[in-house]
Amino acid sequence: MKGTWPAVAFFAIAALWPVVVRDPFLLDSLVLILLWGSTAAAWNVAGGYAGQVSLGHAAFFGLGAYSAALLGTKWGLSPWIGLLVGAVLATGFGILLGFLSNRLRGPYFALATIAFSQVLLIVASRWRGFTSGSEGIPVPFRPGFWTLGITDKRIWVAIVLVLAIGLYLVELYLERSRRGFQLAAVREDEDAALSLGVPALWLKVAAIAASAALTAVAGALWAQYVGFVDPLYVFSVDLSVRFALAAILGGIGTALGPFLGAALILLLETYLRARFGGIGAGLVGIYLIIYGTALVLMMRFAPQGIVPWVGERFRRRPAAGSAS
Amino acid sequence: MHVVPQLLVSTILLGGIYALIAVGLTLIFGVMRVVNFAHGEFLMLGMYLAFWAFALLHLDPYVTLVVSLPLIFGLGWLSYRAVMRPVIHASHNVQIFTTVGLSIALQNVALVLWSADSQFVRTGYYTVVVRMGSAVLNLAQLIAFAVAVLTTAALFAFLRWSYTGKLMRATAQDRAVASLMGIDTGRVFALTWAVGITCVGVAGVLLAPIYPVYPTVGLQFVLIAFVAVVLGGLGDMAGALIASLIVAAVEVIGSYVIGTAWKEVLYLLLFIGILVVRPAGLFGQRGAEAIGT
Image (cartoon, rainbow over all chains, first blue to last red; front, side, top):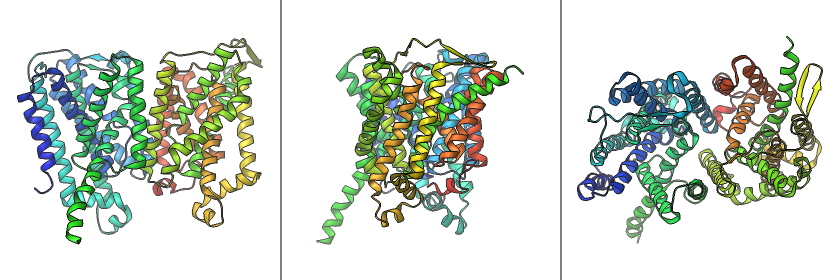
């Protein structure tokens, strides 16, 4: 496979990391990079490859997290079943959203997705009888792989690595398959694609549904890893922006970009925590000021993201050599 | 049926304030084709401005208005020059995430400077109540409504009759042709942005005596404004005005019938419904949402 060696290197390092590194903090960082990278990659399926920029993907993340947590606490079911239920629910909502918002583009689609995630946020935080409201749900720790009660972070690395590689392969498929090319055609010019017989609606709905389901899977795993589900966090616009930002930073519509973006964001977060020390509103604030400013600056100077930016520089060299 | 006058009065008062937020948003969209996701943060800044003037200088929020109006206008102009100008001709996605970035940065500047605590402007007339027939209303709400209506009317008159207003409308209709006619569209965009920000900033000052202020206060109001703006047709000023009243009615009647806990769900569902059935809004041009202009 041509052009995949950076990704192979990235995932190889991730796989070897737990063998070499024993430090729980560094292992935790890797789990989070892979998990947030996966959410960004899932966002990228709809936002990058299908061109449907969503600012409400936290809705699907929350659906996954709540499914796993609620099925576990209410009926004692395995989070793996919760993960599946969450994915199915998210697929359903994704299909619905895809059909309903078929005609909406650009800012209209973004607004519709925000409204959708806000509805779920309100339902989760106000429906006290079922979701225990805005207090959130502590996920009980039940030891074992089937119940995902795992303290060894190396096993967590393995689990999220499987998810991350799976997502990378999905994106690779979208870049190289006939369906992927058709989706790109729809993104660039829907009318032209339609006139060539490309099933535009079907492709867009499928992309949004797949993106939703994969986000829910990440949400379910996250709930088990962190051990607590807070509706005001899992359904927040901030979280939706976080998914999108990692993908944009790394390179929207590129396969490896979301993972690099997630790694960079986590690096920045860790650096600022070390630099300013302590955890408090002030620290979170300073971090987010930099984050917001970085987003504005990036949109201005390198809206295409890191991967294409680096790619251009790599490709230019041999081209210049052959010209001379 | 004794509640009907009360519901009506509450709807109109709330609708007037929502209109002032929505009008700025729709003006910016109509002329610049930018959905300003940072709109709520300028509302928040207006509220803090009123709060600090009150807390430090003991200035009444309505007195502050005289000073804050040019101040917010200046802030709007500055934010255009620094943030919006470079991306004004960029794609929708770039513009969306630029304003999202601005929103995150502003929210957290407020968080760092003024903490996450809710602050209140407790004026002497905080508890003063006005009776109109069988309806009861808060004095601060009444003043806010009056100023909101005045500001909106002034904006309408400005766009309708002033030369600059005509330039703005021409740019909204066709920026390429406007540019060919010798209109400096860059200046028009800067002015539009600053005027839109001023509207929402004034709304913030007016809201300060009624609602507590905290760094993320903008979100709840800007969501309502988005609903009103889309309902009225993005870029349609009169539509935004009427739609603000409709949204206020949904909120007021909804809180009365099913309780305040679920009222947001009502207007969000209304929003999704509108986006699905008629995304161009009640009065907007059909098909505008598909072109995504």
